Image 1: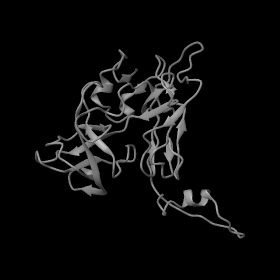
Image 2: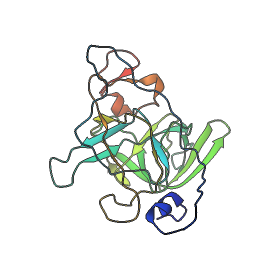
Image 3: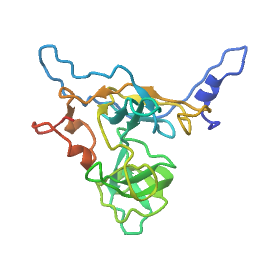
Image 4: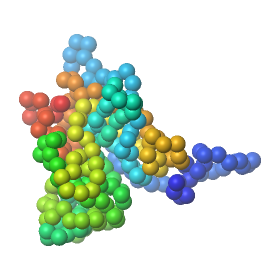
Length: 253
């Protein structure tokens, strides 16, 4: 457990007979409305399964997910692992890497994007969810401003992903190495609202150890749940390929 996480330390116990004033500041991200409002008799754009699951790939520090973020929900009907949720974490390259051997990548940072952390494993987003690719581990993250790309996360990785071009989408991978798959391969639900991750998570949500476990019930991806593509970040190509909407600028799983 990170000793600097005073929220978690405070919640874990101890005794102090006086009053305690806790003060902190920070910036996690912004807020925006991303769902398309539709009108119909008895329509309800957001519907939910009868139960949720444990988030198995939480952020490694204070972060945020946004309304319209996509999950993979598994009700756990097969096997004995229980219901699980995986968030589709993705990032957009802000500036072309510059060489085939580059180990530094600049990612866009504007308050509406997922935050990368040391230890995250990332890969270039494949064109289909069955696709594989080279995945690398993030070894350092710096919040900075580039003279041409603007506000970015300067990310150092364990091995090169090649000369990655600006606007390329990266996604979280299951592990580092070659021919690896993304963490999410069956997107089927959405985040219905913005959610803040304040606490340091457990290293393994299934184990009894210090740290937070996050449980949530995502909104089902149905015909009435429609995203406004103008109000969300550029989606991974494999996700865009699943768009069933015939209306330009709308997205529907």
